[in-house]
Every structure is written in structure tokens, then in C-alpha cells.
Image (cartoon, rainbow, N blue to C red; front, side):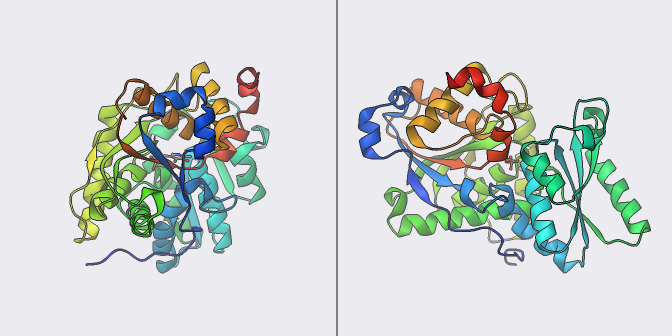
Length: 345
Ligand SMILES: *Cc1c(COP(=O)(O)O)cnc(C)c1O
């Protein structure tokens, strides 16, 4: 068996860069003290594309290859109202001539997308003409059933739907991050990123597919010994189970995959709630932008970076080579501008 088919959609290889230039590091931002003992590199998967950028496009390379192979003309998926995954899916679907149908979760009671705020990801979804159905958190818990009901309705109308699970996170989607780790291996072999394997890969975790692929790819391509996904919702036990299921699915599809790297899910940096950052997390977002020109978002990458800095403060990273995977999320930052006003000073 070999890896599943893929469509080349991402702009790759993405850069592998030091967290900051040596000159900047000497100048010394406050959070740098916490990371001073570590050798931190950033894999810029916020640069996998233009408006479709972020980690989701790597999974979509495999998922949409299957959709095309099956002759799909409609892509059904789900997420929060400001879902990066839904936005990336909508973009690539339109690019490939398929109609995106998005089930988006919201707490606002009126459930009419025309009255939802036009910002960030959902603005892009609307620009693309995606068919959007707003759903409640209770409905979202039944998302798999809901999506198959939508698919059945579309089939009855003579369409050919292909359903992508939350976050594109299943065995097939996770191959996007197996491949991303192969890409890092090639970069290390060229002497980039310090040229040697990492001790750990750190990234934000929201639906588990990235963590599963990174763990499988990190061992297969000898990129790192350990993967530390920072949960942005739910908890450690939940994600350990989800990630193990995805890993098993992927390994059943490709016998070339060896056992995954050690996974240590962290849930200490998830903040007050999904998509809500603490004041300290917001302050770090701003400080990181000003010192490194990296734009992290309050939903995903900002929380993972916060978790990384906290681990550094506890001395856990001393002497370690760390790969921080920047998974994108810029539209999510743009959608929360008003909530950052206080942190901007
Ligand atoms: C979806 C997403 C993640 C989490 O990836 P999963 O594979 O869903 O765990 C992290 N960062 C950003 C910006 C995302 O959009």
C-alpha cells in the first residue's frame, strides 16, 4: 500500500525560520527570557497559501482528491461561525468548481446568516457564495448525523455531495501533516532549521487531525521525538482518544506508517473558553507580533504559543530544540479586533 492520492493545493514547502533574528533576540523581549534556554524554530504553515492559508489546506489536498475521484460536485462540511476549516474548504471547493455547503455553529438565536457579523472567515464564506446553514451548539453535537442528512437531501436533488468531517480531521486528512513532516525532514537535510531533528513539535489542537498527522510524520521521517498539541477546547482525555482514533485510521490506509511519535496533549493553555483568550494570552499575542512580526490568533496559535512560553517559564524547554507549527488563523484574529483593544495599549 502507498499514501493516498493528493491534489497539490498548498504553497509548499513553507518556510522554516528561527523564532526571531539573533539581533532581535539580543535586544530581548520579555517572553524571550522564558524561551532563552530553547532553540525555537517556526514552521510557517500560516503561509500555505493566500486567503486559503493555514493548516487545513494540507488536509484538503487529500480529502478533495477523494472528492474529485468520486465525481463530487458539492462539498459539505461544518465548524464554528469563524471556522478556518470551513473558509479554506469553501475557497478550494469554488476553485475546483464545486459548491460549498457549510453548517456553522453559533450561539446567536436568530439563526439567519444574513444577520451574522460580516467579518473574518464568515465574510470570506459569504464572498464565495457558500450555502450556509447556521446551527445551534446542541445541533453541532450531532454534526455527523446532520451532515449526512444534508448530503441525503442534496442527493435527492440530484447533486453529488462529499462530506468532510469537522476540521478535515480523519485518517485521510491527517496525511496532510504526515507529508508536512516529510517536508520538514527535507528542509533539515538541506541544513535548514538547524539541520538536526527536533526534540518536540508544538502546535494548537482543535479537532486532532493535525496532531495525528504530525505524530505519524514525526516518527516516520525522524523529525522529532515528541509532539505536544495544545488543546484549545475540550480536554486532554478527549483529544487523546480522538487523536488515537485518527492515527489508527491513517495507519490502516498506509502500511508504510510506523507507530506515532510520543504524544503529550496539553490542556493548560486553552483559556476561558473556545475562541476566547485570557488577558494574559491577548497581551502575549500583541507582544509576539511586535517582537517577531508573527501574527498569532486568539483562537488557536496564540494559545499554543502561550502554552509554549509557559512551558519555557517552568524550565521544561531548557536545552531543547523546538519546532513551533504556525497553523494560520489570521481571519480569526481579524474577526476579534475589538476584543484586543485593551491589549494594544
Ligand atoms: C483548525 C486549526 C488548528 C487545529 O488543527 P486541528 O487539526 O483541527 O486540531 C490550529 N490552528 C488553526 C489556525 C486552525 O485553524
